[in-house]
Length: 77
Image (cartoon, rainbow, N blue to C red; front, side, top):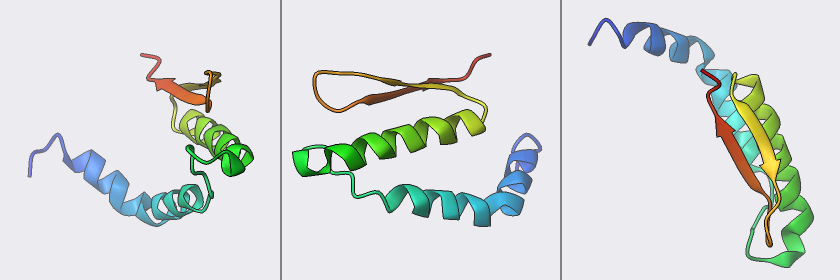
């Protein structure tokens, strides 16, 4: 294992449980973007993702499109 990877792997091993729970939270959204019956859920999922990405230190925003909203995020550095 590279010494460069050790801090990342250590962080993942100590936060793995919380990361898995966040992934499960995301997957619970009934957000099928191609089915208009799920428009509200898709938008709620996108907004949840924006907030989650911000908590990870990214600049994130919801952008409107002709269809479903788009989540745009990038590292501010």
